Amino acid sequence: MNYKGVRKEHADYQPLFILCPGRSFSSVVCGMLGQHPELYGLPETNFFVADTVGGIFQRFDGPGDRHRTHGLARAIAQLHDGEQTEATIERAWQWLRERPTMTVRELAWHVAALVDNQQLVEKSPSNCGDFAHLARLYGAFPAARFLHLTRHPRSTGKSLYQARQDQRARRRQTVSSPNADRIEENWLKVHGHIVRFTERLPAGQSIRLQGELLLADPDRYLRQITVWLGIRADPEAIEAMKHPENSPFASVGPANARGGNNRKYLEDPHLRTGSPPKTNLTDPLEWMPDGSGFGPATVMLARYFGYR
Image (cartoon, rainbow, N blue to C red; front, side, top):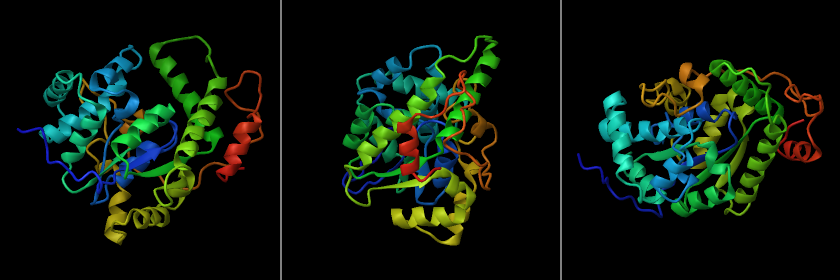
């Protein structure tokens, strides 16, 4: 098979990137949007954490980080071979290892060229972990659209804290949770990067949406997103997006690349709608040993996003 793909017109290609910290509904939202007939949802590819393919592997070389390349391998396997098996995943790993000097821009455009007339949807939280990653992303896709997805900082923090506790339980670690204050710090830092980045974009190239609103009323907000993107907004397209479980990446992968998205989403990718639990910005935080609350900068930014 020829893996070069068909070159797209760079000026006309407008992939959609979901910008948010981890634990912000991004797995299910990317899965939903990727089911639109004109879009193609990817797993977490982490394209833009380095300048080259070799740099991506170096960035995630630690034993606790290697799973973060699973989504990239699954995407390559699916697009090259039409399925994800241990054999096709191994071929994907080999294809990537043979190209250590390939730039991430070339890699991202290679993937884009393989999805025919659809626009990519991608949601790696690492895109926003450093402003340099966002700059690298924009350099690759200057016409991209950006969905700034938010979630209440209390819900985000609680979800991340629980995920870390679950991970320790699986590893049979008995040490208490370290760096609890970094949960809030990460929320504030990542959203600060996104606001700084999106404020520099031309009008209409980005929008901001509370994930809670989207999940509470998907018909309404999915229609708004499709109108913004200039793609089909008919009932059939909206209904397709309400079934993220139909994505080829909405399940645990083969043994040599099981990840690529939030673990709970992979185990149960169906859309669950409804209003979220009541939250506020003032009560003590469950994950802080001293019972402290959010700092003033977090409260200010959360209120700017519409949270209380």
